[in-house]
Image 1 (spheres, rainbow, N blue to C red):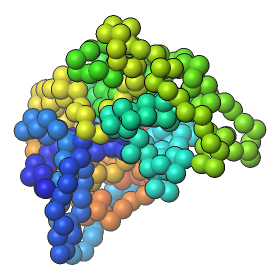
Image 2: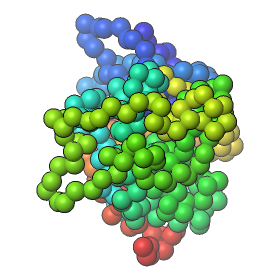
Image 3: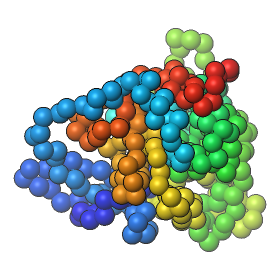
Image 4: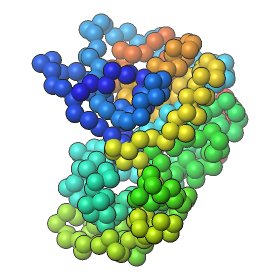
Length: 354
């Protein structure tokens, strides 16, 4: 089925709900999207958008000019950032998006559902315990610190992040100017949601519990961690070895991330919607993702309806669809966000020292 609402919050690889879609003779481009910001749709579905027209691609003049961007930045008051996996990748974190997104020959998206957790909570927890361990072994990169510095300098800056690794938090990004769209690996909640509302913030125990110790092992460079070797047989972890919820005493504690078939936090979405509606958004920074992929696409469309918003993308490649969508006043900088963001934001944040 098609989702008729285009202004939506988005799909992510470890995210929310999906539903079947119709096949076409000339198949459309497919995006997975979640709650519609404008129409308050409460679940995710597959939405479709038809292929771009065959118009010739003419990039806006000065689309990659740093001096021109600096001028626009200094003229901009209200700035929204949407950050994706590319920002975390610059810190050395695996994204599980390349090579089919496999983990021990399992598609990572198949592990990110309530059903998968109910079927084998120990195996799903191993996957997330490994991700927690990896996130704790890396540090925020200069891109995270540059965004945090921009928040300190500009009270009208809001950062939305799809990343669940807590690197924004560790970079001291002001909490009031940060929204973690898909939760955090370091939040722990009860599997009996929504009946039980237990949640623990910023639990950095590594391993989370003794049964998950295999996920916290380290090996010498060049060696393969047994946990990551599909040929290495893992001992089954029964649910009885995982911590129970301290409040309801029946549910199992689980990672505080948003899984497929789960909605994004309604209160958070309402806060974001209110911020966007408050006034014109002068600039949208799209970091480590594409401005034509949700959620960035949804927010770009929403902000453009209220004024002449400049869409500024920092990503490792300039794809064809992004080229076609660019307008005068938009910018695209190709490269590592950890390198580019401190340079791009320097007129406001000064010389970044990390």
